[in-house]
Length: 241
Image 1: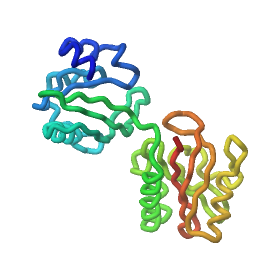
Image 2: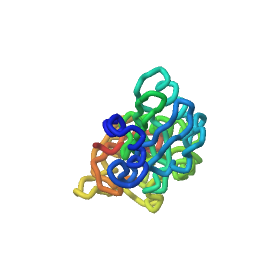
Image 3: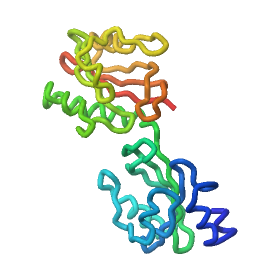
Image 4: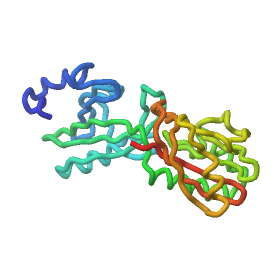
């Protein structure tokens, strides 16, 4: 904003090319109050000159309309939506911050590498409902990347309380069918055993350990929340910042 206030539209050149204002997946784009994209330093460059008022994200959310409605009221704000991260070649959650300046809206966003604990719990209870309704048929949806139960770094996994075998895993299919009761994290801490032990006396719980984040590809601290459903333990975890 300081650059625009100083140089006016001359700043648009710097906003549009790699360098000071364009780094990896961070960039600025400017939309007129009429909904027309004026400049972009990112992949949305192809939208320059086009009316994007009704542009929707991967889930059909009219996020540009939300930006414009708020900006036309003279207020800055932020909006969360799902968009293609070209660095990872996948749809990810993104937060864009915007501010109106005259008859334009300046926008910059970043991708969220970690889902929250609340989002993990919401997905867990949705999976619990699916399992109760569909029984073991639900495993196919949990394992399917397009089944609605794999979202960014969130995924469902299910372990049998009878034999300790993994019945579903949205991120690591090679574990399905294997006895994971002795599985440990990189620090040697048991991961599944505490869940199975707790499930003998409690209907739900949580456990902390280290695990690979499928989005960042780094080993991070993770807290998994689990619920016992008949002879299964259903779990979803969130990575800690």
